[in-house]
Length: 184
Image (cartoon, rainbow, N blue to C red; front, side):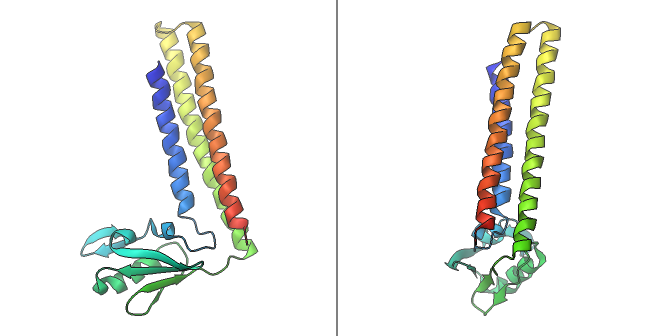
């Protein structure tokens, strides 16, 4: 039965990691190379992440510099960034692409926070779905006779503790990102 708890732990950990990655790609007013994680460039017919075909660096607090290794791909990288949903227009000087992150307005900060909370709640729903499936599996094992009533209660408590721990982790992650977004 410990292997079932380990599987649940792994599934819940993946949800937490996914949320963390999702938060990293959200713009918080500062230049952050991870906002380009979802931007794919058509590199000779193959969709390729920007980081795999260029050097991405933060030159100043609000400026991201992208220097493709293949200079002929400057226009393609610029086009891919414009087509993405990061909402910032890049500037191309012929050698590098610069993305200047404007300071966020109060309204935009609140809008981002709403999105943060929605993502957190979606992750909690996924965690609870894993818990529900585990509880159903425990009840089925009891019905078949693989587990006793006491064992089921013990494992249900373990599953609930895992659920609570990961939901708290989601809350901590959300609060941390919200603090970063609301910081001026």
